[in-house]
Image 1 (cartoon, one colour):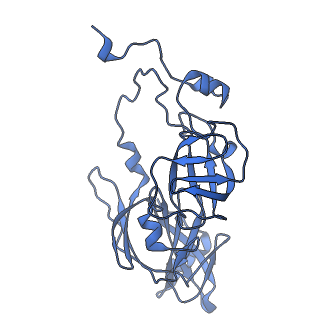
Image 2: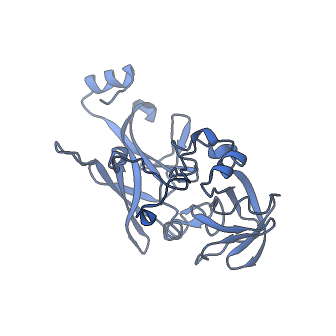
Image 3: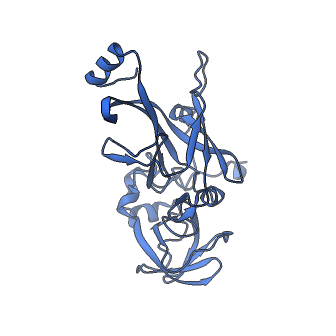
Length: 283
C-alpha cells in the first residue's frame, strides 16, 4: 500500500487538476547517488536536490501482474556528451559496468500554487540492469527487489571453505569498517596502480576497488594481488585510471577459518567445513 502525507492526501482528494513530475534517485553500487528531475527546474525534496540539467529520462509504465512475477520498469536515458557521472560521460560509465548493481528509486511529487512541493509518492524501487545502449541512449530495466526471493533452496551446503559472500548479510562483516578511501599516486602498468595508503602484503588480495572519479567511475575492479605497495587487477580495463583518481578499496577473503578469525574477527559466523570430504573424493 502506498502512503502519503495528510496534506498531499487532501490535495489529491479535493483538486481536479494536478501538477506533478517524476524524480529519479540512481544509486550506484559504490554508494554514490545521483538525483534527476523530469521538469523545468530543480526540485528540492526529502533533503535532496533533484537536478534538471542532467540527462533526459523517460520511463514506461510500471508492469504488475496477478501472477507470480517480478514487477519491473524500463528507463530510457538520453544523454548529451556533457552529461557525466564523476566527470565521465554516462555512456562510458555504462560501458565500464558502472550501472551494474545500481538501484533506482522513482518518486512522483505534486506541486501547489507557486510551484511549491506539497508532497511525494514513492512509486517504485528496484535493481537496475543495462538492457541496451548505443549512441547517446541507454536503456535500464529496473526489477523489484522481490526478485531476490528467486534463490536456490535449500541454500546450505558443506564446503571446505566458507560459502558466504564477504560483506553480505550472512557473512555479517560490515564493509564500511574495512573500506578505505584512496587516491591513485602512480600507474606503473596497464593493470597496476599505487595508492596513497599503507597496507600489509596481501591484505587487499581478492578484494575490490570501487572507482568514484576518473575514467573508471562507477566501475568495480577486482584485485588479483597486493604485494604491499602495488595493487594488481585481474584483467585490465579498456579505460585506464590516472594519477589523482579516487576510489574505495576493500580487502578480500580466502574463506578459510584462519582468515575469518584473524583478519575479520568473524569466526563465530564462519561456515567452512574443511574436514568434510568433497563428493568427488567419496568412494
